[in-house]
Length: 283
Image: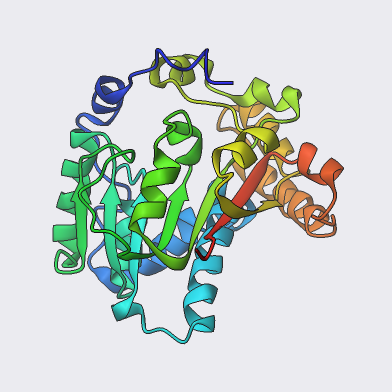
């Protein structure tokens, strides 16, 4: 399955993509405001003012927070890897909540912007960024409680050594939560930025690809978006016009999505986004 991806080396592509960019919400006044703004703009569904993938990203984040609570852990003793941390927005959000966060991204440009954001929010004591490949990090063995990724799995899934590296750094029974687009249903490919995908070597995620990639883990796939995929269509058609009307329609789409059972293969096939949950199997 990898033969069409082996020629993809994208470090320079990501450095070029991030060069000169600032992390989102870099202008907020402090950690408390940052947490509120990040939840509102990054982790909320589109109809509530978030991004079109806000719900699945919020779901992955809530699942992590719930797992911490269930385990009876304090945020301050929990270590989190933000896999493919980009400009650092998620890492800084979690650090503002008290977690010990390491963001890893192949792009030095992305990590530089992320460090600037962490400094501005005053969380550098519990938030660091490593410009490294996820296939070989400098993170210590068995030191990570949770891994999370927002829109990053489709970037790093082409690197075959990442699952083994995850196993090396994860504590026994550690968990990972990844929120991403899903491409089993081919008409959704119309919404993909094909030029960007080609430039960065991105991969379209499918059930079999994810399950094979994480074959050494216990894996759960939670589909999330069906009717809300229409949001992308209206955004594409209206190109910034009628934004209020599109968000009102999205509220209906979102309500319909919440009535769809998530347990059947057909439901997964037609989903436009998926939350992948992995658990390190006990030895």
